[in-house]
Image 1 (cartoon, rainbow, N blue to C red):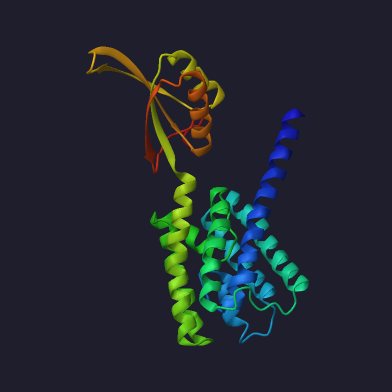
Image 2 (cartoon, rainbow, N blue to C red):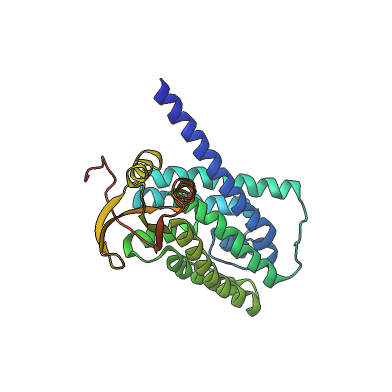
Length: 289
């Protein structure tokens, strides 16, 4: 019963997390993408082009195209990704509809097409990073990018640059050359910014520690951080003494906790820190399927 309660709590928290990320994306689309008329790597961008030919609300056009792409997400990426993306795609249409009703006739915050496009890139990249980090997406072209990443092993940002370029070129059917150029540049910069944000999320640190409180340190890393550690023996050249160093690879949150612990328990410890951009391993207790 207790485990069921924990599971339900985690599902609720995950749902709130995804909703918050999706609200960021919807705000980026409504406040910046729509006023810019740029078609920057999104189904909403395609909808902005199509609305000139098909007289339906952008929210409805977005939902129709998302349904088609969601089926592809389930089939080609996986059930977990598909279920979360269904949820976030519905939320996107709901949030866009909400903004349309609350702010009818909204034009622009900046009243500048280039500034709108630039703001859109940074705001939506933040939302996309949160979703991709939780194995989800906002639907649409993000699904296409995820499919491309799975089968080509390219960086996600580069996949979205390719998709975004095709979307941006479609804006030539509805808007002037300036809008097409802004869409193309926006798609490229959007992919670059997304990769930067994603790398920041995935970045880990390799921390090596030489401490006189080795046993307590290892216990803290394993039992409090729930991380792993390795111990290496070496000779210190200054005194030619045998010493031991503890090595741990931690994420950003764990790194801050570990640094605080070391400052309190052994301020004289010798530390070296390296950035780790990627790592592959099989978590404990997991078996090959």
